[in-house]
Length: 137
Image 1 (cartoon, rainbow, N blue to C red):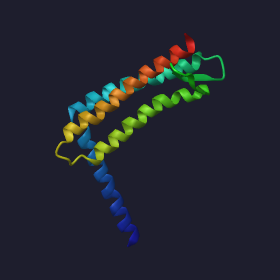
Image 2 (cartoon, rainbow, N blue to C red):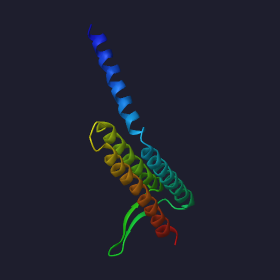
Image 3 (cartoon, rainbow, N blue to C red):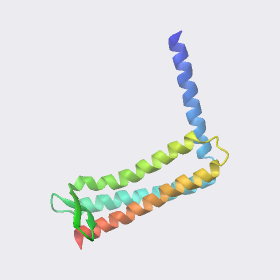
Image 4 (cartoon, rainbow, N blue to C red):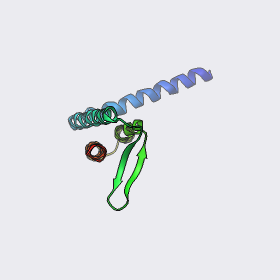
């Protein structure tokens, strides 16, 4: 009896999760933001790969401050944390939207959260350009 109750709740929960993600991607603006985010994510991953491939040493400068100079030095594999952070922000915003799909201002939330994720991904790409310029110019 306990197992059937567990499985019933499990499949009911899966159905609710599926419904919430379907509501998020039913909007045309979600697909537009998704395309923009995917573009910036692919650009960030390619930039990180290019920077890692171009390095000849065992360290990379990840941050430079005008006042103090080099702030953050790490191994070349740490460059992949930048695009991974952008992916984490997108995933967190998507989960928040899926949880709030019954709100009255859902379309506004989609614009705010997906717009913020797209903007964050664009700024990450700019940060990777800065990392490239710091290390190779």
